[in-house]
Image (cartoon, rainbow, N blue to C red; front, side):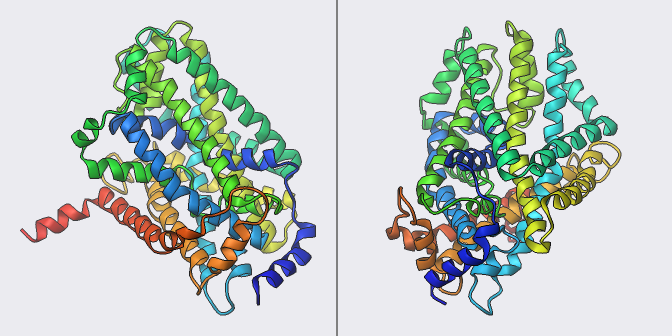
Length: 480
């Protein structure tokens, strides 16, 4: 069936019953909110600190454009053309007799897996906000601040209550509908997030002694790359650029199904990527000057947020206020992703079983709470289960399945589906992506996105396994 006829049939059958955003701004903020998460404000600063500061940031921005942007356009295109979530989008667009729709199970699993630990981590942010606002960290030394985090992990009841609170708030927003709930609440939350982070940036860059941190973050020193190893830094930048947008599990495709065809998808994807990058870069402007002002190493790893920064706020004038604002900012960043992914999860049930929104919400509240419990218990009652050796947790296993498997494999499938003649095909993809006003997808990149980009994603996938299991070292040992 020709593409145009297929598009018309989809429009005729599905358009009337498909919810739509009330504004372009709503689409941009919600899609950006899905991309903006803890990876921007938790992982990005410490990985930048580890791999050389400004020089790493430049490499990261390059890969964000050449890796993340094309795949985002493809996810949006599949969503808008099919007018369905990832649960059914491949069914609608795939050539008759092909099996692309098999990946719909992987995409749905990816959304559920992400929420199985993200809800718990968001709960941590809420706990830390209240601890900071109550002054619990005041007067504590670094060891005592670290003990607060470990004590929190040892309390399954507290973490369960906060996780359930996160689930109820997130699905409560989704239950109000796309326009009145998800779009309206996310607009307010994203606006507050941007205001809070700008306030934090102003406070941080005006601290005495902040200049050294600004220099590290804003003035590229490429000698720092050679110190870490050029290949290591490039892979780290590729990985951060790839994972920050959470592509490959159809989390973006759903929002493509909610928008009209008046704007081109490449232009919209650029706007969303810019907003996502803005938040990541602003997070660095909060953390690096503050670390410099109080002589703290910004490359200390995941403990940066929960152990290092509370120590910095302790030493900062008005630190209780600024620390509370920071954890409010982190909570908003986490909720922006949670609400977006919950909307995706709700749409699976609505698309597959034609359930009304309220029934889909109630079912998934119970499902997500149940599925999130292993992560909560993995830090305490089930801490003996160490899937990757001593010190690893159930959360590490869940994160590995999605980050090192479903995201790269899913991105590879979207790439092949949109470029191969055995899938949806290049012409159909390009026609959908370019509909409407705005920047068009560059047709001259066909060779790159068809052959080179899939190879890069494959390298990221294989290197992820190598990093986790040190496969190359084990192979080398076998031959010596």
